[in-house]
Image (tube, rainbow, N blue to C red; front, side, top):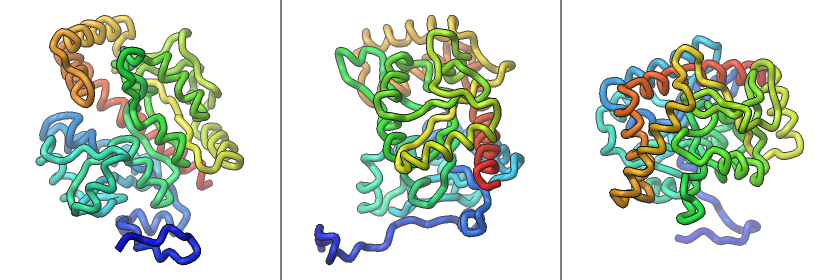
Length: 316
């Protein structure tokens, strides 16, 4: 039966959301929790490196004093927090698991299927569960060539509609970063630089060409900025931009050259739409001899640790 749209008489079905016992206990006790995405497990890297990375990222959250809550869709139910066997199941299935963005959640729930959540979808589940901090690698954004073919990640609009602090190393280097920063501004999403006034370029450090809207000296100050933002914009997220670790970062000039060649190759081969991101990321991986993956793993762990520190500060 289709629910009655009249809010005075509608009887809403129970939310198809399962919160892991450890996560639920932490939330009930007012202890810090950090949400984590699952597409990095299924679509980010191969087995068994994907499982090793997922476990390393969860451990980074715990080491900083918070509880990790990896998000996914299992059997048509949204999951906030996964047991070890579920992480391994996702890692072994890899690309066979559906990639779930915001638009896909209803389809997967209705069909009783599994899905690995993107940044945009993870924010939704985190907000529904009451988790205020989410750590990832780099967000999606405005793709290069957007003036000819508008291609904008749902991550951006997702942050405009989910009251979650997203800790990332800026946006992926394959994107049009100036356009991405402008889009965040237009959507009213503050960008808080964690110890930096430069917008990070995912696995490359930022430069003076792109800035942030506020600078936080440490996690405690970032938490204060988030809390202040939510007092008058309670339904909008915050992007906390954490630069990549110095010892793993790849120079921006090198990355720009690699990405430019990859974009040109994609154009020659007619690759576009949903296929463009995995194509470009694979090209970057090959061109950097694996250094991009090592940097990505380091970024994920660093952001997980920073996210946990921010979550702890929010609950102190």
